[in-house]
Image (cartoon, rainbow, N blue to C red; front, side, top):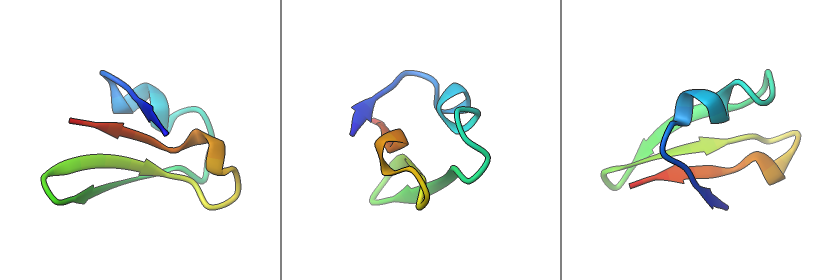
Length: 41
C-alpha cells in the first residue's frame, strides 16, 4: 500500500477505486485491482 499526499490522483487511477475513511485515516481501496490501494495520514 502506498502512502500518498493526494488521494484524488490515487482515486483517478482506476474507475473502481473508492475513498474510505477508517480510524482517522483516508484509504483508497480497489477491489478489482488491489495494487492501487493507498493511504493518507
